[in-house]
Amino acid sequence: MLKLLIDRPYNANQLAEAMNMDYKTIRHHLDVLIKNGIITMEGDKYGAMYFISKTMEANINEFHQIWEKIDK
Image (cartoon, rainbow, N blue to C red; front, side):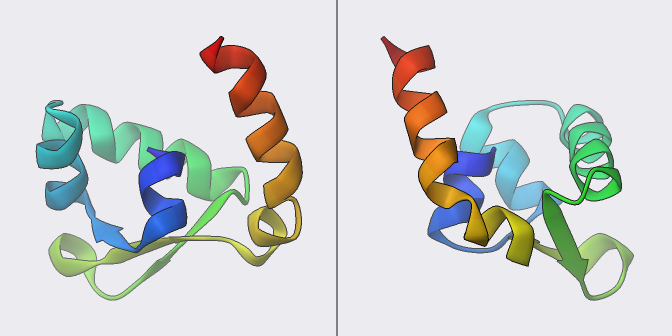
């Protein structure tokens, strides 16, 4: 999910389609990421768009390093 949101903002439905996952599952994970300050939401409920947070942007290099380790 974060890899997608780093490239561009998505709404929950777009993420569910892009990740081939259930909409409710996506919403749950989005809520967790918002609660932990990893992403932000702009807009109203169903049409809300999700973006990586300023904190995530500031730590993007660390994210990429971790991702490389996980991906191997």
